[in-house]
Length: 392
Image (cartoon, rainbow, N blue to C red; front, side, top):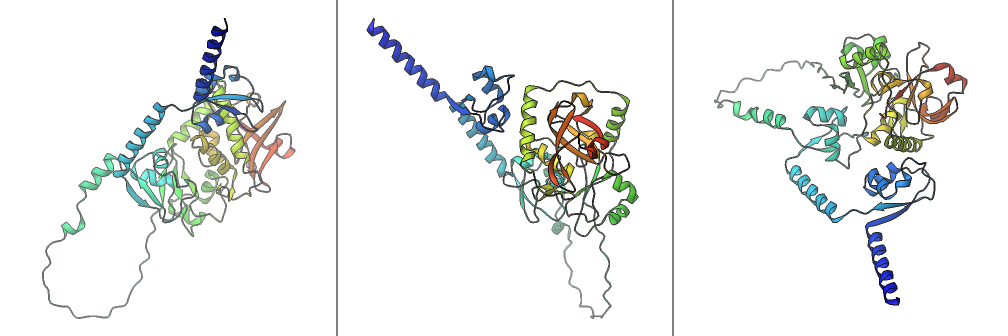
């Protein structure tokens, strides 16, 4: 009997040690969600739920101990394969030097590759703060390579030089010819024509460049300021896709899909990322910690989950997610207001908490910068317009 008990104890000890080698214990701290923890350890949410079935669908409490699977050797081998494939791709990369007015989006469009791909091969580049002279790796597409091959070098086209007698030097007056500036223009996902503001440009000058009225330009860009910062993305013409989306929103009410557990975790993650900027000053056209406008804060926050929102609050209202009833509001939804006296949407925030009929939201206000406000405040109670569900 003693021998059998000893064998049982040894087997139990060996299985426990093997189990501990495969898994890591994590203690939940304030602000963490399953989504955040999965990102931290490089595993999926499903992996965590598999080892912690009681955590699925339950509210995550502080100091809860979760088992996290360790990466296996197979994963390491696949990672090495990925590195090899990346090194192969790097052999065919080109270097692009950023110039004034260029954004990562404009460069991606220029070379015909996706914004996600250009971010992947340039991990050290901050996509929200491209500097003049930055060296950016580019993997040219087959189409781009073919176009370059078809181009005949200018040196080949030059005919053989013939010797001609020198001509007498005649002093002629130098006439300065104004150089026409080429607008930095591209299209976004909704087909809107986007202009990247260059140094010294004004709203009036851009309106004349695209032959649009100054009033129309301001209506398309509700948060626009007179002193345009260099690199600001300005909508100069609505695309057909955005117009169609707006018409569909008015014609029919979309069926709302309940938010999933995964998206609930994403909402908590987005709120935590936006809250890191509490107290940051307001800056027209700003999308970095140096200063945000209201749509810039939302644009920057949702980039953390690889989601690209339209750049203005008006465009977000018609082009981001689906409009829902106020009673259906949840954390992570976008909330819109009108503060311009014309009734059109020109302000946006993200819902952080719902208490009865009160909605709290984080946003960047002109007076206070990044703050959390409430629909119970008279100013916002009178100016509320709609709520959009973005995490579907």
